[in-house]
Length: 166
Image (tube, rainbow, N blue to C red; front, side, top):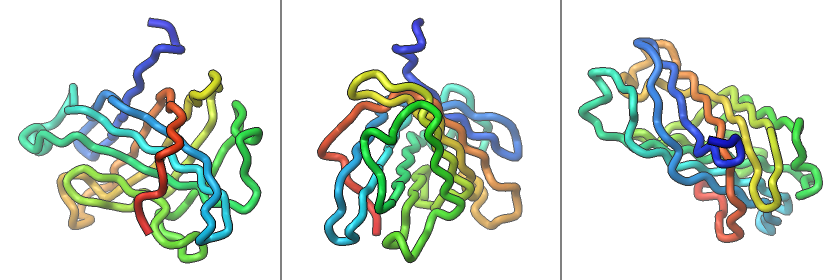
């Protein structure tokens, strides 16, 4: 399979080991947000059922999705070139309108320590590598280490995609 057709995968590094989910849809949009007078880079990925799960998640039949919004005054399509990196340490930033990340497994959670890197550009598609962490997807009480999230996929431009959270 050529790299250009790489479907992408969402990997969860949990306290009990690695889980893998195929990315079924990955979209991006860069648009002007008049309510905040900023540009918004919205990236969103939807994953299918996991191909490698642990006992506590196998029965959940989850199909996770993840949205991250980069909010900045000076952001343009021309700036989305290979090597560009966005560092979003927090999933909630009051100065950027509130929630800027949302990871859904069985519950909605903010992701922290988010790092988005543009790997390649192919016309209307961008290949992003995305990292972050979240409260464990099965044990929400904080007694287990945070789950590390890794995704690498081609994201297709979708002008209808907008920030879904405030």
